Length: 141
Image 1 (cartoon, rainbow, N blue to C red):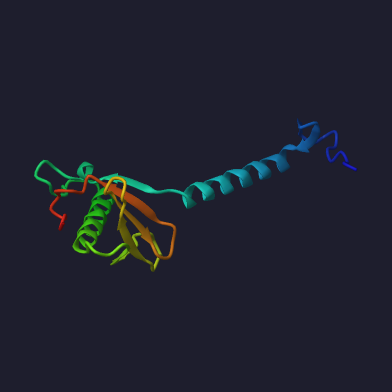
Image 2: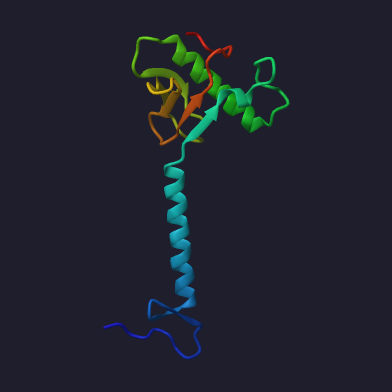
C-alpha cells in the first residue's frame, strides 16, 4: 500500500498520480542526470579528421590551443605507429593513453570499409577513429 508521504506544510508535486516531496524529486533527478552523464562518457568516441589539425604546410600549428595540439600530436603518433605495421591485424603501438590516471596503451587497426584508423586503450574505454591520415607526414605506408 502506498502511503502519502507529504504533510500539508511540505512542497509536493504529483508524478504519475503519486504525491512526491520536491526534495526527494530533486535527489531522483540528480541521480538520473549523473547516471546519464556516466553513460555518455562511457560510450564517447573521438572521431577525428587529421587534416583539421594541420596547417597549409601539413604541420601541427604551434599557435593551436594546448589541448588541441596535444590531441593532434597523439593522433600523429597513432598514425605513425599504425602505418609502420602493414601486416598485423591489431597493432600494439606502445603509445600511452592520454586519459588522466590511465596506465593503458593504445592498440590500433585499419578499418576495412574505409581505411580509417581505429584506436582503443587497453585499460579504459578511450577510443577513436582517425580519417584523412593518408599522405600526411606521419603516413608510412
